Amino acid sequence: MKINRDGRLYCLVHSRPSAVMIDPIEKEPQLHHKPGTEILCVGTVGCNFSCKHCQNWSLSQASPNERSVFDLSPQALVDAALERNVTAISFTYNDPIILFEYAFDTAVLAKEADVGIILHSNAAMNPEPLRKILQYTTAMTVDLKGFCPEIYREFFGGDLDMVLNSLKIIKEEGVWLEIVNLVIPTINDCPEEIKEMSEWIVEYLGPDVPLHFSRFFPAFKVTHLSPTPIETLEKAHEIARNAGVNFVTIGNVPGHRYNSTFCPCTGERLIHRNHFHMLYNDIVDGKSPFSGRPVPGIWE
Ligand code: SF4
Image 1 (tube, helix red, strand yellow):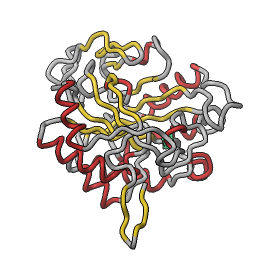
Image 2 (cartoon, helix red, strand yellow):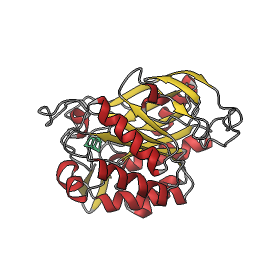
Image 3 (spheres, protein in one colour):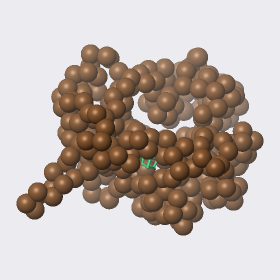
């Protein structure tokens, strides 16, 4: 979020977050990343998308000065992360592209201090800034909001091709990636579309990128739709597994069996979760103890 003053662009939200919180890393979700630890979550106002269902609309659709702000420099964020001994600082709530300079300056300092950086993003970023910030980023959670270009444009206000290109770049740069698909009834819950999306993930990103199907609840301008039926999420899970995605979970349904991660070879439970809470983690040295199969992620 920038202003043009005499031909120079200034970032209006640098060092001025509107939301700062300690959360479980599972909430991001980063489910293959130091399970059971905490992260420092930071967001500002503004977004490059205008999703009609946005859960964070009071931040994402606000202007600077509409929301109270904290005064927290990049160094203050890193100091807070060290003091609270969190796994990472996560730029989340609104899109990190909006606060790019703030996130980048923090990421440089965090790397020096050995603090992780997570970006939770819609991934609608140009290749150059994306590659630049990825050099200092530990992991990304990307919201892949569907697989229909028209719906992407009309309902979310974004460009699907740009997002798919970013996903390929993240993979290429070797930054740990997890994908979330919020399944919204009548908008992006068509089984063919979910199949096409899953096949694309397997072909271009590989079968081991975790894919999380998340339950929609009415919010912002979408109060006329019901929450996603559990069966729809279970069907999406089945479609993705059949398409070859190895690690598929279901979120926003506390207590569901597929909150957990399973060994794709034996079907045994590797990480037992209830909602955002890890109950146990059986992964040993990055491998399934049941099959010996490597389970990609950041475990140490
Ligand atoms: S990208 Fe995320 S924060 Fe931005 S409008 Fe969409 S749901 Fe809200």
